[in-house]
Length: 153
Image (cartoon, rainbow, N blue to C red; front, side, top):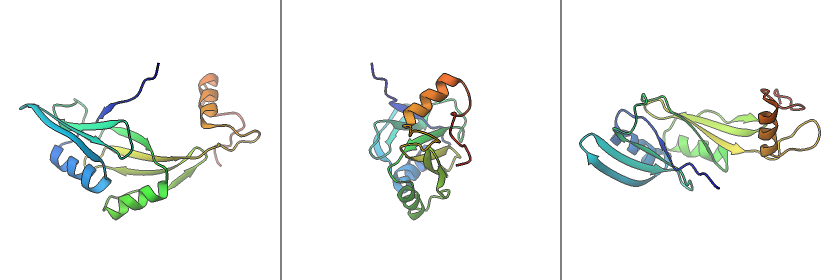
C-alpha cells in the first residue's frame, strides 16, 4: 500500500499576502481558493512538479504563524537559490552536506523552508550506499549516525 502526503497546512497571518508571496515570488501554482464559511477559507498552493500541496487561509489550523517547517526536494539547489533571489526572496547560501545540498528561506510569517538537492550515492569509507541504505542503517542502529560515515565530510 502506498501512502502519499497530500496537504500540509501552513499557518499565516494574512492569507492574501501569503498567497502573493508563494505564487508571485516563490513560483507555486494557485490551485484552488474557496471561502466555505465566514470563518473558513481554503487556498491550495502547489510547488511546481509536486504531488503535495500546502493550504493557507482562515480557520485552517491552530498552529502559530511562523511555526511550520517544510522540506522539499529540488533538482538543482543553485538554480532554486537563484530563482528565489531573482524574485526578491532572501535565501541562504547553498549548504553542502554528504546527504544533500540545501537552500533555506522563510516566508513573511517566518515559516521555514529547506530545499534539498539529493546527492547520490552517499560516499562512505567503504562501499557506496544509496540514501535509503543510510536511512535504514540509522533506523536499525537507533544511533545518531552511520558507522563508517565521517559527519565532518
